[in-house]
Image (cartoon, rainbow, N blue to C red; front, side, top):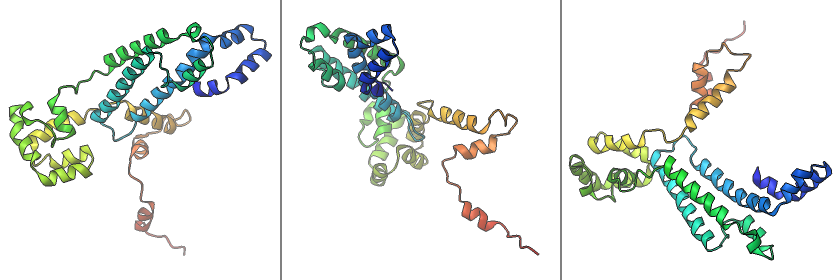
Length: 256
C-alpha cells in the first residue's frame, strides 16, 4: 500500500489540490513527511517479506528462529549504515536525499536510528534468541555437526551413535527435519524425543488463522446452524481428493 502511495505521490498531490484539501495538501508536500514516507516504504516491504517467510504449514520453530535472527542482523546492518549517513539500503529514501542540494536541512539520521533502535528492542522482547548457546538446538538442527560433550550425559551415547550412522547422515541431507527425526525416533529414542519436543510446538498462529478463515467461508450467516466439522476437516486437509477413485468404486445405477 505504501509503495503504491509513494509511486503515485505526484498524482496524490494533484488530487488533494483539486479537492481543495489545503491542510492535507501542505502536510503531504512537507519534506519531513516525504522523507518519512520514503523510509517507511522500504521498512514495510521488509516486514511484509518477513511475514511471508513466517507463514506456511510445514514451518517449525527452528526455521522461524533462523528467519528472525537474519532479520535482526539486517536491522543491525541498517543501523551501522545509517550512523555513517549511508542510506543505500533504503533505495527510495536514498534517491530522495540525493535530490536535495542541502542534505543537512533534511537530515533524518536521528529519526531513522531511533526507529531502528526501538525496533531492535521490540524484536528482542517478543523473539528472544533461545537458540544461542543451546546445545540441544544445535543437535536438532544438525546432529552430525554438534559437540556431543555439551549435551546432557543421558544423551551423549545415543548422539555419538547417531553421529556415526552413515545412512542417517544420508537421510538427513535429503529429508525434511521433521521427517528425519520421526523416522529415527525408534532407533534413537532419547535423542529423538528431545528433538521432537523442540520441533513440535507451533511457532506462529498461521494454522489457527487459516482455520478461522476456512470456518468463516463455510459457516456464513445463512448457514449458521451448519455442522462444519467434516467440511472443515476437508477444507484444511493437505491431501488432494481422489475423485476418480471414489467414483470408480461406486456402483453404477442403470436405467430400466
